[in-house]
Length: 136
Image (cartoon, rainbow, N blue to C red; front, side):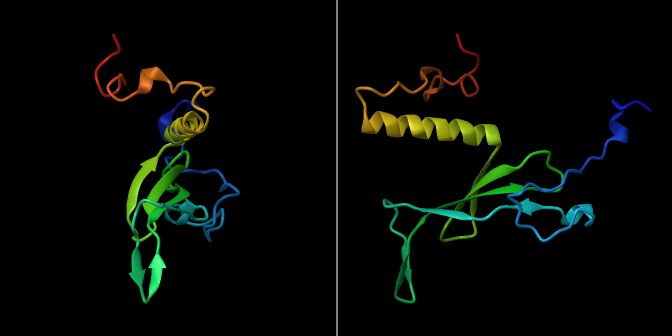
C-alpha cells in the first residue's frame, strides 16, 4: 500500500482542533463528536428594524462564527441571523477572504473616494466568469 492509496487515508479530520474551537470533545473522542465551533460574534445592523420582546428592543443583524464538521478538512464561516437560529449562508475561507476584501474596498471608496483604489472590475455584477460563462 502506498501513501497515495486513498483507502489508506482516514476520511475524517484527524488533526487536533484549532485554538479557536470551543467544543467539549477530546482528541480521542469518537469522530462523530469532533465538530468544532468558535465563539459567536454579533454585528447589529442599523437599517434592519429588529423586534421588541418583553419590552426590550432586540436588534437584528448578523452572527458570524467558525465551524468545522468532523468530515471537513478546513473550517468555514457561518453567517447567521441574530434574531433567529437561521444560518443564512456558509462561506469557505477563500470566499470569506474575498468578501472581506471587497467590503473593505467599498468602505475605503465611500470614505475616501478620490484616493481609494477602484474595486476589482473583473468581479462586478455581470462580469464574473463563474456566473456568466467564460470571460471574453
